[in-house]
Amino acid sequence: MSTVRKAAIALAAVSAMALTACGPTEDGAAGGPGTPSASPTASPSGSATAAPSATPSKSGAPKKTATPTKPPKSGSTDPDYDVFPCSTFDVTFTASPAEPTTSSYLLKITNKGTKACRALGHPIVTFGDLDGQATERGAAPGIEDALRLEPGQSAYAGLMGGANDGKGKTVNSIALTMNTESDLAQTPLKASTPGFYVSPTKNSVTAWMNNAEDALSL
Image (tube, rainbow, N blue to C red; front, side):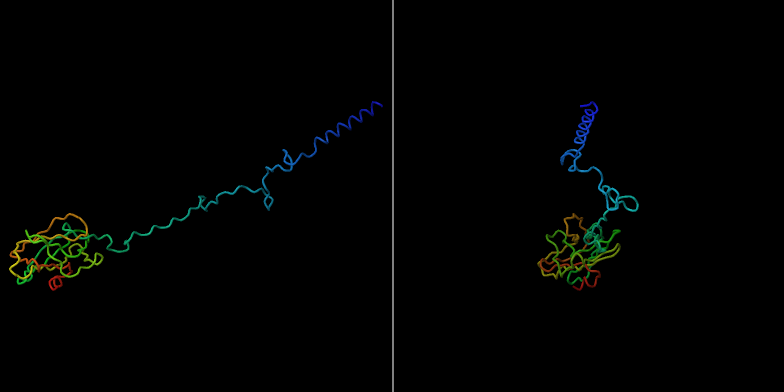
């Protein structure tokens, strides 16, 4: 065989081996058709799809969710919600004779403070050095309907010692504290009541009222 022919056969063999080496690999092998593509997925418009991002507001800052408004405090729509019961620290006190035959006195308190307060229920009245206190006469309004006393305004109550039945005692002074529906310690307010007769079973006091006539007629 000639040298030229041998060279041609050798060249053909090398070319066949090169083609075999460049052929397709098995699925799943590196670079094969089963290997995921690292290139971005084309969008319908033909451009690559980028990762989603937060949508900024017009000002450039992220949008915020509105926070619900807190409900108002209970009773805050009531103009009296912050008006506290009157105590002896808030008022002045006087006692005036009303009806000598029944040993009655008109009790009067006046708001001496700078804020309104409420005169609750019945006054708490004690008789000099006698034990016990005046019994309550008549009904009193609830706390929401109690008298509101603006600075300088007054409230009244009628105190009855009772007719002289020979079973009671005479006292020359009385002391008053206010109903505050709490355990607030109060300093009693005293008033002079010379010769005030107190029956053990018929003494009584009305609830606070906004006028003297009603306080004495109940």
